[in-house]
Length: 120
Image 1 (cartoon, rainbow, N blue to C red):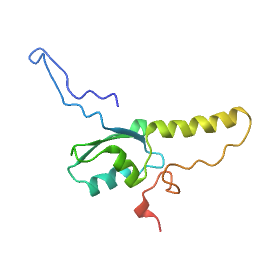
Image 2 (image 1 turned 60 degrees about the vertical axis):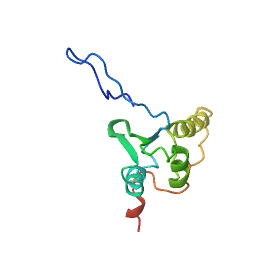
Image 3 (image 1 turned 120 degrees about the vertical axis):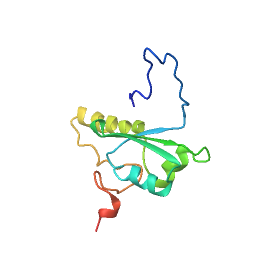
């Protein structure tokens, strides 16, 4: 997500970090409660890095038995790529001066910017 995780200086000229290529970046839109739900369900087994300014979060399993595809399906959230594709489709409709269909995320009817447990 563009964050510096480690850097060299005058005393440390070599650094390394293991990189897990099984990660997902998601937009908070329609996925607002996902980070909290993941941390509660899989404590110590998944890392969440959030960027509120960009309205995005990264999901990275720290337990190699967990896979992001499983987490995505289990909790019903979408990747940033899926989010962007939904918006591209809506923009294409608008460019034709048509009202786009109401957007629905991968999970269905979850509210756009609220947590499920706060619903009445």
